[in-house]
Structure formats: C-alpha cells, structure tokens
Image 1: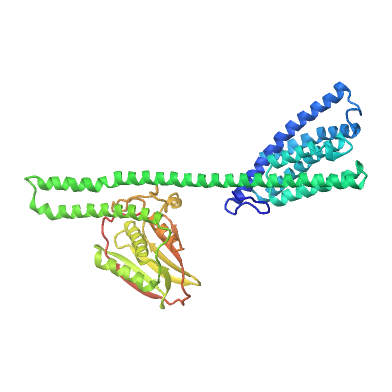
Image 2: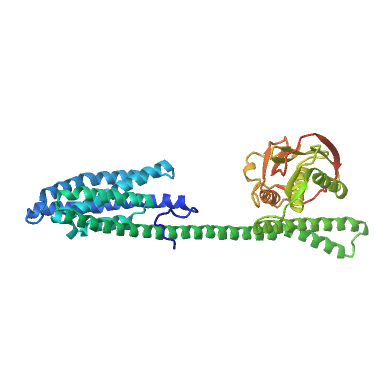
Length: 467
C-alpha cells in the first residue's frame, strides 16, 4: 500500500474515490451531530441536576456558554448535511461545497474538544485528552486530501496558539503548550494520511475487482450468445444438408435433380462457413488488442476488391466507384479492411432490389480518409439504427431475397475499424437507402480529383451475412 502523505490518490479512479468519500463524510457528519447533540444534552442535564460549580470546573461560565452554543449549532450541521446528502451530485462545484462544509464541521469538532482541555485546568498541556480525542475523531472518521489535512492542522494550531495566552502567561508554559499541540497535530496528520491511503487503496482495489467482474459477466454473456447462435443458426444449414442427402439415397431419386441438390448443399455449407467465420472473427477481435498495419494506397486497393467481386460472384448489381485522382494512403490491415468492405457490400446487395445501385466513394480531407458505401435499397427503420452495430443485434433481419442474418457482420466491421483508430457511422431512411461512412487517419494529405469507374458486379443470392 502506498502512503499518500503529500500526494493525491492514484489518477485511475481518483475522481470516483473523491465523490465516494465526500458522500461518506457527509453521512458521518450527520451521525456525529446526533451523537454529539445527545452527549451535550446529557452534560446540560448534569449541570441542572447537580448544580455544578466552579469547584468542579475552573472555567464554568465559559464551559456553560460553549455548551449552549453547541446545542444551537449542531442542529444546523445536521439539517445542512441532510440536505447535501439528499441532493448529492457528482459535479465539481457541488463536491467542493460539500467538502468545505465537512472541513468546517471538522474544525468545529476539534475546537470543541480543544476548549474542553482549556476549561478543565489552568494548564492545557496537562489535560490534552479531550483535545486529542477531537483530533482522533476527525482523523479516523473523515477522509481528506493532503492539502485539506494540512489546512485543518494549521487552522487548529493557530486557534490553539491564539487562545493559549488567555490561560497561560509565562513564556515557558506558552512554549511547552505549543510544543505539546504540535506533537498532537503531527500525530493527527500522520494518522489521517495513513487512513486516507488505506481507504484509497481498498477503494481502488474494489473498483478493479468490480470492473473485472463486469468483464467476466460480459464474457459469460457473450459465450452464451455464441452458443445460442451455434445451436440455432448452424442447425438450419446442417438440417438442409441432411435432408438432401437422405433424398439422394432414396431409390426413386431422379438424376435430373442431382445438380440442383448439389448446389443447395454447397449453398448450405457456404452459409454455415460464413456463420463460423463470423464467430471466429468476433472472438479473435476481442482477444487481439491491435492489428499489424501497413501503409496502403487505398484507391487501387478498393478497386481490386470491386474487381474481385466482378470475377467471383453471380447475378448483377450496379456499383459505381469514385476515388481521387492521386494516391490516398492510410495505415491498414488489408485482410481486415477487405472483410469490412465485403460485409458492407454484401449488406448493400441484400437490401437492394434487382439492378440496384451501390455507390462507393473514397475521399481525403485534411488528415482523414473517408470511405462511404451507399445503396438505394429499402433502408433501415429509425428504431433499429441505435442497435445496428451491436453484437447479435436485435436489429438483424432477413434480406429482401430471404438471406439469413446472424447479426454479427456490422459488429465485426466496427471492431475492425476502431482497431484502425477510425470510426464508422450510418445514415439511413426507410425506402431511401443506407449510407455507411468509414473515417480513417490519413498518412499524408492529398488533393481531390474525381475518377469514376462504374461496373456491374455479380451478386450471390444467399450469402448469409448482414444486419
């Protein structure tokens, strides 16, 4: 445990700790005022019942006046502390006000204990018990930053030194009493700082444990979600494969259906593979803190992705690609960024009708690179937009051709983009299409010149990904 004699708590969690201990300080003020008020009433009763005189207290009149002052002041401290607790807020201005109130109460308690030492005998250094008790109560019950503890220590020392000449007049006694006060205040400061350090250490440890518990709970929930997806979504393509193979084993199986059934088996296997790849990608992205990035010219890289779609997919959709006329560079992981683009293009195709249009645009402004993928499809309802990037999103839905969705595609996209130190946003309206915009840090600034490449790109009817 680190002892914070002249330093604040560690930066990580300091703000939360300060808010926590100020609230506890206020609650302690409320409790101590009740106890002190009852004790003061008992003393008041003893004065009346036993008719205490100067033979019992050397400074009876002063003690009697202080007793009445305490009975008047303590209810005010109680009411103010109650209101501060009731309206407690984690705002800097409020916290400063609340802690100032606690400091004022601490000085009041110490002063009350100090005057008891003065009133008991002519020589306070022989009766420091009450003085020490006041300091112990404040040091043990309340939590203060080091500068607040120093302020209390100095204020108490000044008050003691100011009051002392009224009770002691010789130089020797003045020096000895002030030395005794300094010794007591030094002990108070050390005890207060040690207890502060102990509380801060325990608070930060408990916060760390709480955060770990949340991480464990989230990991457990993610595991359950993944198991649910595996159990539910993989069951369908496997059931299709099983049914087709059973039909192919039947004696009356027609040879004309052979090729069609093989295509259905292949489509079901592709769907199962997509689901498995998404699950593996999600798990891998959570484990890896970052990717290996390399400086890449994005104009040619994006064009190669579109060209790959042209060569390997079936069906037709129109894609237009706009890029600057000069190189645009960014630090990217090519494999991961290609997965991002594939997911966004697949989503655009799934929710666009036949001969739909998909516009992909690359631009560079200042220190940012922007990649947008815009479709003219059915769009996303407004109530789904807040959940579109969630893992196993409740916003997932089937494509217009019946394509299934696991709800992982866009979650993976956001994970990848954020690990590129970028961001992705979505803008969509029903029946007006959807635009996904990726922003990445640019390696160097480039000028903007438009270069349009418009190419019909094939579409596979059942890809098994999407939002």
